[in-house]
Amino acid sequence: MPMEFLVRASNRLPADFPPERRAEMRTGERAIAARWRQEGMLQRLWRVPGRTDWIGLFTADDPTVLHDALTTLPMYPWLDLTVEPLSTHPQERAAETGPDGVPARTT
Image (cartoon, rainbow, N blue to C red; front, top):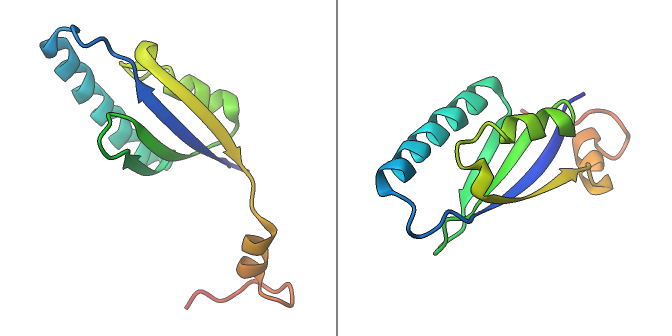
């Protein structure tokens, strides 16, 4: 069963990094993110206001699969990443199944 992960990334790319190389890497990262969305790995992505940091909600079979995917990002060597595996809270399980333990209807 796939796991959910909250990934926080801070970009540590040096300020004097060549702008054309930076633009190249951003294009590459957008393409990878689009592929991850299509494959179902990337669920949501947020920008942290006023920063180049981002937060993403990912789904992967296990932490190693997610790690291997994140290392393919062109900016990976300059990213400070924090990965938090997520577990379903009891309140969410109750909401998903209903008070009697029967799956709740979503219609």
